[in-house]
Length: 118
Image 1 (cartoon, rainbow, N blue to C red):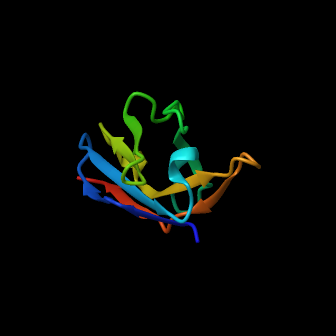
Image 2 (image 1 turned 45 degrees about the vertical axis):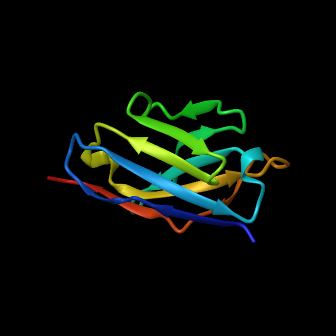
């Protein structure tokens, strides 16, 4: 079955950087668009970035220029490199797979917590 496992979260000071990883299994990773979302308590899940099978990327305005999504098809892993982190970036971060047929994100990982604080 489809599994997505995020890692790399933690506590970082404002202005710092983190790289999140998402290891995927149970589907043909190289063929699917992958995305990163985040959610804070009491907030809706927010789209951050996506990357297609052809490495075309798309970013939310809130993270454009600070976050970079990438993928390694040989490792079935998608990454989110985050720079210049702000306290407002504190959230649980999730990776997801986009269903080719429905164009909806249908599988989610368990999430990894990112806390930006001094």
